[in-house]
Length: 138
Image 1 (cartoon, helix red, strand yellow):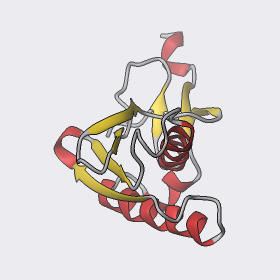
Image 2: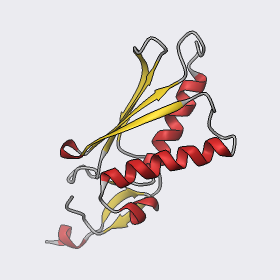
Image 3: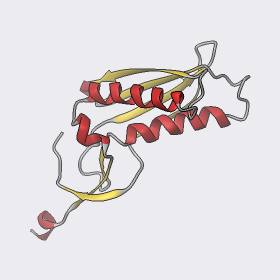
Image 4: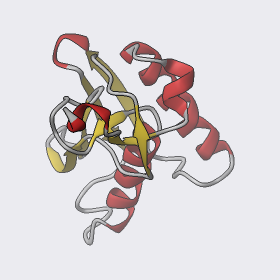
């Protein structure tokens, strides 16, 4: 009974409040945020991304284009771009750290070379600050 009174600890982002639990809104916001970073010179101009939503699987799929193993052999620029996209997406997610409730969404980010073959990626749910939250049922 006391477990019901304890808070659920979640990784939450401020953008989740704006987009709610609507995954297409998260995708639109992610594209806009990357565009803003690009305009500020904080995201490579030659790197673009495509975002698809699979609402049934609570999956946000991102393809990062404009880099390749030949252009970025040590993957420094690639992983920086992937981490940036992941962090921005995390701002819109709610992740119960106990694992008893599934995250609002999972994100799959794949860097695709000029030959259309994936060469780097990240699959996850979120990173950020942990807060007590009301348990969500999404």
